[in-house]
Image 1: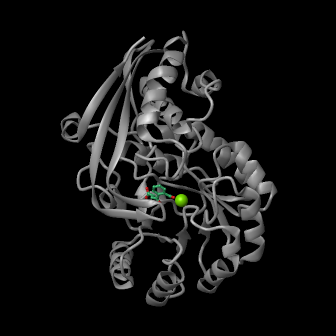
Image 2: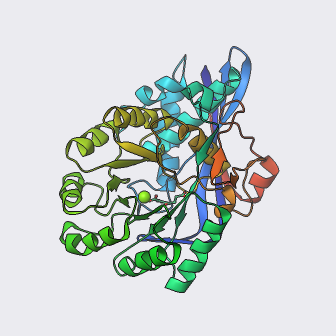
Image 3: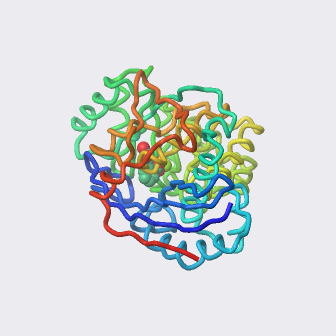
Length: 373
Ligand code: OSB
Ligand code: MG
């Protein structure tokens, strides 16, 4: 394949409700969707990807406009120069560029979608996924009051979500967690995510979470604190799960070796793409470490790709793969992911199995960058 053009469609998608984490509140989702045109033996084919970097570097070091700049100045030229490009070689062609996994992942994703469409193969079949559905969990933002929180969680539980994840931060942790556990009882699959809001000196406080039989605690400490997560894991009964810290297979290997992760949240964007995500899945599975598929408020493109990835056998816990309507009144694909009976379907169409609705996308488009050789 030869990469002919990359088009970055910059979007601003309103959220159905504000989403608050320990690092901030979002009322709309900014992203860019990558439209890749590749020449294949079957003629020109279009593939789609999306960038999960956020507006500001509050979750990870990347930010959206920086990712677009890196794509325009370095990623695109490097790939335009390749005579015979394959999705499996994108990462190696970009290896000399340090960091920027989310920028790289978005482009690899679009190339992979095009490559699979050219041979009429679904991403799930490409991965060897046998499952037809995957359990659907939901990530609940920090709410202003406990009664509001219970109302929001009731909505998701009544809708049938397979697991609830609650965002926590210092000052909004033990009380809301206790309230949810008391309201929904011991059988609710329930976990928390701190997005790096604590330090190891908070261990005596965090230990109180052990009283609430959580499935796991996600990333209580900083991105660089793998060893400290290992120490905290030894002080708590609640299984330790890492998100922000797992930026590569090497980081996953370190975390597993140091006892810092009983569970790993795999986000394809954070680790540089879906192929690297599969590598972390394989490594974790070989070590008996449970993984689940995280989310970054993806549009229908990333949401479909995540549903396929989560079909791999090592994804033994429900992911943050909620129905599109959990975040968006209007998605940009013709058949958005729907949660039913606590699961979402693994897409079966060619590539990621979704079609972008260009008319709808245009409504949310704030700008388009066309990159050519
Ligand atoms: O830490 O998992 C996280 C959203 C943005 C940034 C970080 C995280 C999240 C979520 C939402 O928890 C997951 C989703 O897309 O449903
Ligand atoms: Mg997280």
